[in-house]
Length: 413
Image (tube, rainbow, N blue to C red; front, side, top):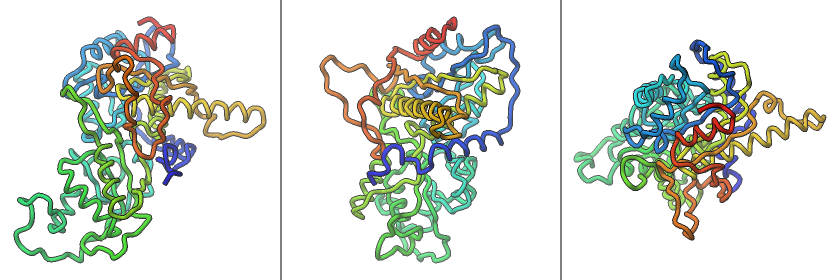
């Protein structure tokens, strides 16, 4: 499994992901935006985290509200392209857009919002398979919006096989259940976010993996490799109203991985890991930024992105990984121009850099002088490099982040 690590947390090559993203976005319905702001076409845009940057729980951070008042032109339109990239996934995309519109007093379109599982739209090879889906909120609606047409929830699986869920004494069946033989086999697992009853989901997901999708029967020997697992949101922690960070879906994944390893002696494998800091999420966001600029009629290519977040392990690490990818792509373009080969996909991207900006309104808190380096909170399949956790800039809040970016670009703030 060492071969997975950060690059192989996505089993597609970057070119394949870019082609799929381009095809998907080309099929999205467009919305017309009228130009009319006196400033020239922007050549930069923002990738904004939500929790800990714009909001804390259900309350908007005052600096975020002020920042968006400045970011909107007299016609009520954003002055530069903005995509909201969150590792949350327990809400429908259009609902999140409506929520942000109300909090920020600025119109946010659904296609400006990337939830942790949004890139699963690209995995069409699994859309017709019978998938067990775990999470909370509108998991079935989200799965179907992503393209999955045959999903089974953990609760539906528990109802079909009541004897599988045995941790809670009050939920144990009081009568002997008849083992079902007519339940179609499950062909894969979708992990869209942390569930409510962790013990139930951990047990039933493990049952599905160990039984090759037939938890009512079981197998003498667990199959390996096991059924495909697609997971989103690797955040160990996230920031809400509480003074200390809360457990995220990354903590749930850590539990699932530990249980599977303990039972089988082998590592749980992922077909794909998405959400920040996955490279696929940033490629997907870049494509939406380009699409947004085209809709606004901005002719200048978007060359620089500013990624603003509060979590070094996801926001900063992901932005820095994407910046490294862009730098490698740029070197590939130059090599091709010199006749030394290179990828055609790299020629299609005009983005040259992704600057990571860390704010102090969420998970991150400036350390005490002389304090030790924090432990690595990132996912198992992402190699740890201290340099990836170092933001290009550390500022107080998102308004300071935007002011910095506008200054760097020579734009008035």
